[in-house]
Image 1 (cartoon, rainbow over the protein chains, first blue to last red):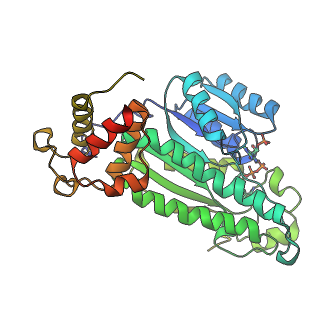
Image 2 (spheres, protein in one colour):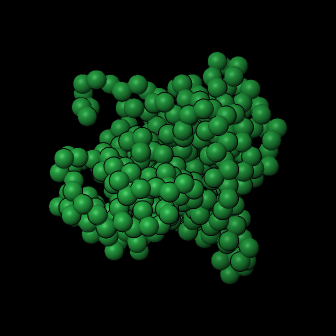
Image 3 (cartoon, rainbow over the protein chains, first blue to last red):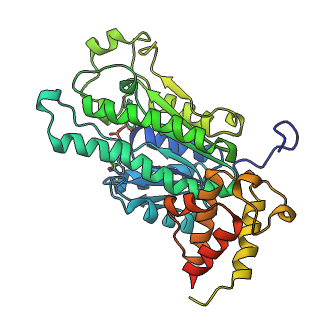
Amino acid sequence: MSELGSAPAWPPAGCALVTGGSRGIGAAIARALAQDGWPVAVNYNGSAQAAAEVVSAVEAAGGRAVAIQGDVADPQAPELVFAQAEERLGVPVLALVNNAGITRDNLAPSLTDEEWDAVIATNLTGAFRFTRRALKGMMRARVGRIVNIASVSALRANPGQANYAAAKAGLVQFTRTVAVEVARRGVTVNAVAPGFIATDMTSELIGPDLLAVIPARRAGSSEEVAACVRFLVSRQASYVTGAVLTVDGGLGA
Amino acid sequence: MSAVTKEQVQERVVEALASFGPDAADIAPESTFEELDIDSLDLVELAQIVEDEYGVVLKGEDMKELKTVGEAVDLITERAN
Ligand SMILES: NC(=O)c1ccc[n+]([C@@H]2O[C@H](COP(=O)([O-])OP(=O)(O)OC[C@H]3O[C@@H](n4cnc5c(N)ncnc54)[C@H](OP(=O)(O)O)[C@@H]3O)[C@@H](O)[C@H]2O)c1
């Protein structure tokens, strides 16, 4: 396989699956990948209406997308979501973006088991199970792109987020390990670590005090995160694997 | 499920292994995975193919026991029937 000679068709004959694609960063990622020609499966959990709007926006722009319900913390979800994506879009999942995520902030002395478990189950275990399912098809296709949405909290301590930081740091090292395991199959596995991005998740956090510590002096947009994911999913990123790309206005620098 | 013959399994296993690198002509029942340069990731993929096609689940422990192509074919044939 020559990297310089004949360029393979891109996107390959597959679809992209974005978990938590109904709102915020995931919705921007779904729209961006659709613009690059990927048929997109937009997974959502509770926001059916928002997911339908993402699908409509993609279709209005001439792309193809379907909305698929599924709670990523449910062990059955990967099988059900992949089966639906592959049936409704007619091609295997060759790009997976593990974006679904939640916060349940609390200082460690008061952090409950439920808050701990919910964040680990959704942000870490869910990404593991979706990745495991995706690798089956990607390894055999000898091509695939997996992008895990981590966080600057994986790299830099943020009080109140011990559960979230543990999950996201776990996701970063999971990313690197899997990247090494499957690199010779043409499958790349990378992480994007956003800083403060203006979405529903952060609507109550972003104020003057917070902005003052961000070198760029502003929150990022979902589109700025999506642009990084778009690069990592592109053909041009074929030699980038096991990387963690921060998109944080300099916060982690 | 209808019976699968050892010959069918042998043919499918050789085809799968050849897709991982070695020449099909070099793959004999007595060949070891080590000689063929078939590594643990290749065996995981072989297990997936076998599961998809014959409904036979080969676990990590099963794969670790297998040293030769013939042993793999025998185990898969036995479990498939
Ligand atoms: N915003 C930030 O500043 C920031 C910074 C660093 C990292 N991140 C990470 O970026 C990702 C997206 O964050 P966001 O800011 O876009 O959050 P958001 O606006 O709260 O949106 C979260 C998305 O995840 C989905 N989701 C949540 N739990 C789910 C589950 N169990 N199963 C399936 N989908 C689920 C939601 O779907 P429904 O509404 O349909 O349930 C929604 O589409 C998360 O992994 C987050 O940790 C965000």
